[in-house]
Length: 406
Image (cartoon, rainbow, N blue to C red):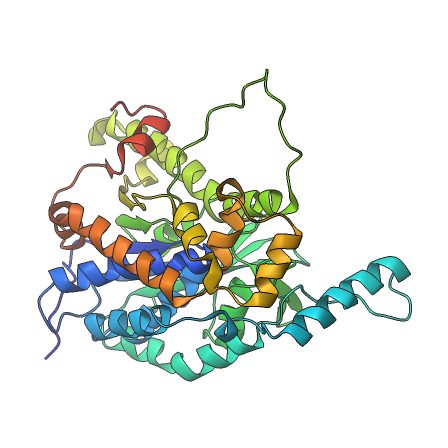
């Protein structure tokens, strides 16, 4: 019999940002949580919100909410045995044709040869997800009371809005804010493929009458969907490890930034910068709410809720881990990265997002597991609804958030 894990007075939300292959780290943290809970426990997160690779993990958890440990084991099985060919076509002929298509379309200006839809063909990933994700079970999980709501976010190219598609209990309503909205729909494979459609790298996906791309685009407030859907506290499993690097020595010549460095920088910004900005906003709101006694709150302050947040991040530099596993990548992809100078450790942000190979993903799962176990007591208190600090996060995160001293 499934064990109830939802304290009636608390809705714990889980937010899983994007990060490509770095999403394996999230699986390791979830594995640790599953081991901390009693066998047979249901999903401990009534509200789940995911973006890009985090959307994949979110949907699997939601569809198997009755058996949390089984859901996590399924994620570990897939992520722990990944190879790039399961995500995008990696054979030399396909890579060559794609390169020539891009070159011809640029040189000819779109004449004779049409513009390519994307750099890589992710049809293998669509096939993998269609075999492993049972979307109708999400509704079953909600009806059984094992899940309150799940949302996956994608960015509309036509409307220039961030759209969070969600399934939820009847009391949850759609919302609309500036450049972002929440839309109740029965989730399917197209929603998931849209959320993970990294711009330029994977093709956009049409939903209704609009094309959508990676949910991290336009997502200035990644914590918002979970809050709109009723979360009282939020666990965030991020995938950025490194703190800011020191400014270069102005007296030393600096090499011109390679394409690999710029592309990795763009993906890092896309997946993670919105999260830290949103954490800073929420920190300020929490401080404002806590500074005024409940009986003295007026106006909009009476409608605000303080949200407890816990952030788990990698304790090691994922770029360095990716660099150690670089030779596992298919030859055609390695040649592509060499061509754009993605060879040194400093340029391996891009590699850390694209390295869907089991040696790398297994090490990230292990890292996530170990990092979660380092904060086991705090995680258990957070997940089981006990009193927790307003913010629990690595020291450098708390220091960077305005108003928090370490």
